[in-house]
Length: 107
Image 1 (tube, rainbow, N blue to C red):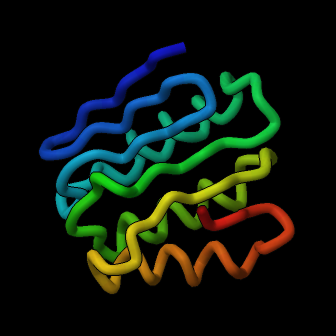
Image 2 (image 1 turned 180 degrees about the vertical axis):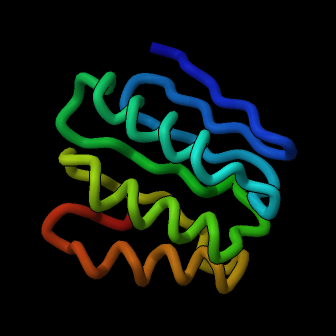
């Protein structure tokens, strides 16, 4: 697959079933990025998607809302790679993931 969405200070890269969020998300384009993520959900062949947040920085409330919508709207199972020591925003993402524990696994 190998699709990439490039925002102002960040990019979202899709390779196989891994969606990597890279860079500074404080200037996230909510509509465009959300649409890209939902479209990528349809393209992933595997049953489980891995959301990789290891290289993400400055995850604001807008980004958290967008990823919450993605987690709800995408019918696939998910695993999230989150470095807990980096920021409270990533901990917020982890907390969000725990809401849907039947669908999302933290790795």
